Amino acid sequence: MPTGFPAGAPRLGERRGAAAAGTRPSEHHARAGLRTGTPCPTSRGDPLSSAAAPVHRSTTPPSGRSLLALLGFGAAVLAAAVIGGLASGGSQQVYSSLELPAFAPPGWLFGPAWALFYALIALAGWLVWRRAGFDSALWVWTAQLVLNAAWTPLFFAAGIYWLAFAEIALLWVVLLVCIGMFWRRSRPASLLMLPYLAWVTFAAALNLAIAVLN
Image 1 (cartoon, rainbow, N blue to C red):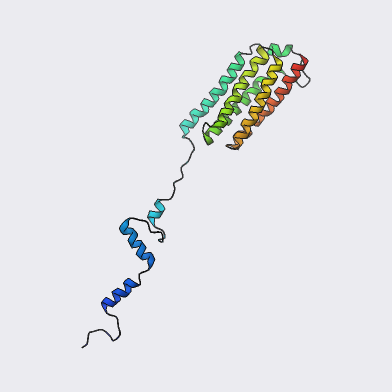
Image 2 (image 1 turned 60 degrees about the horizontal axis):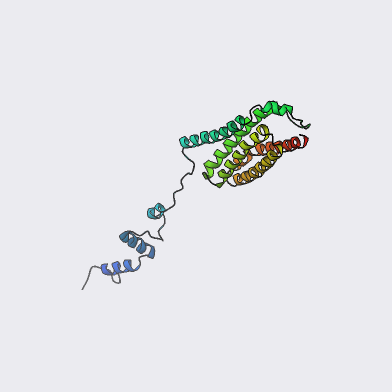
């Protein structure tokens, strides 16, 4: 009895079975993933997989907060400078009355030099804060600032030159540690502290010479 199909041609049911049997594994997993809501690991360009990718956010503080922090670091350095200045009234007269070594600079040079160094100290602290927050490096930065403020009254107000030398030697060590810690957080901040380290080294040598001569 004729069926309307050529001899040997697969019938409709057979074609469906063959298509089902020939379904690729990736298509099968993709369909299963759509039914269960689970992303298919074998599918390429799956939007569900791309949605799970990590989102990288910037750690830079907002500009307003960053500006306030810069002002805060400037205020801290200014406070140290004012405390040291108030405790060393008449420092110009004291300095000019001392027996000084040949390499001693004129007294008027200290004011402009310290103004520059204090600006660099504040900027370096701020750069580290922007990169790492207020962590252990900035506690060391604070310690060197306190030692900086304490040296002036010891030298000029009290006139205890040997104790002032011991204090500035401790400042030099703490400052060196601070620069090393800054280097691991912000290299520009570490480099900004190098002129200050050079000045403290010179000031320590001058302090030692004055202690010996006086």
